[in-house]
Image (tube, rainbow, N blue to C red; front, side, top):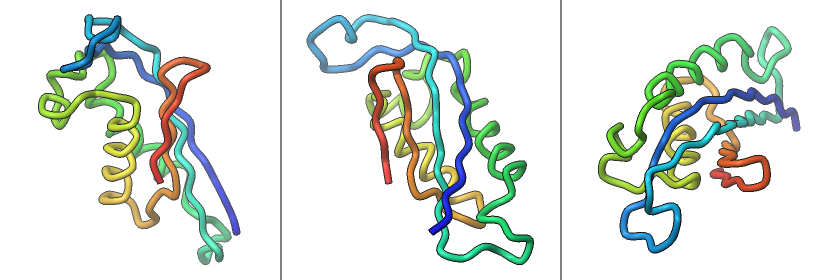
Length: 118
């Protein structure tokens, strides 16, 4: 099995709806996103996926949320902008727009707290 990954960072604010605790208040994070792509076999160029292609698509996705209030950005205007929901959203966006689907997306809310979707 071959694995390749891309990391990116972005900044945004959010608040959690229907939540009792400090995170119900508007606050911000410097998020980190790690994407993993896995394949049994390499393509004709000897790659799982071209890093440039994967990073370009990830940058397009992240540009929708970078320096934004997540609660105002679809789909987070309807669903809570939790690390879990952000990870699934990024996973789905990548899967819909790349020739190779990610095998895992991890979103770090802080250096110590993260959520993954796969």
